[in-house]
Image (cartoon, rainbow, N blue to C red; front, side, top):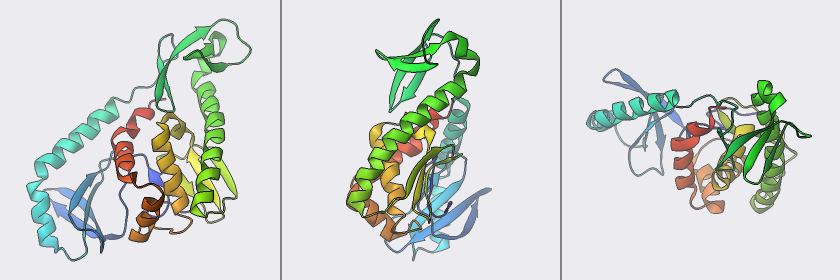
Length: 250
């Protein structure tokens, strides 16, 4: 099963990788990613604090250094923003009124003294059996994983048919910092937290992973494949990079 720099998407939305080398500028270390199809230079700040320069193949290192020096204020501002976002990913409390995401929408929690199951979604509320509060996270993760399994199986079946991909199995589990992964054996994996994302963003993850059945790396050919099936993938990818942190507090 490939890991970065090949198949999975990280929760920070790491850019396509064809790693060239690293540049040190003002005490900051940037990994340089080059592409023959790239027309402009771009700096990417990962939520983990990793820094990337994405550039056309023929741009000299000195030009990249000059570009970074002109953007240093922006880079330091983004690093500070990322640090604040990390601090603002609160751990959920399983109390009345707490909000929990599901397919991009937030639903308030209601504690119920008596119900047959630990948790269900009813009338726009998550209803959690009060006696199960002590293991609230376990209950929610199990509920999310079951819903994610059903949702991603349907999405994969639809998209795989359109993309000409033979998928052997869809599996939902905890993938750490990755949203998804496509295995060389035809199995596709998704993080259970992906079911918290808006459907259009979760769909991007599906298309992204299935595109790896055709191209194992994040080459230009890979992104062309994604573009063929999801022309607005750039906006979805950008949303995931900026907002994915919101689902990490559970």
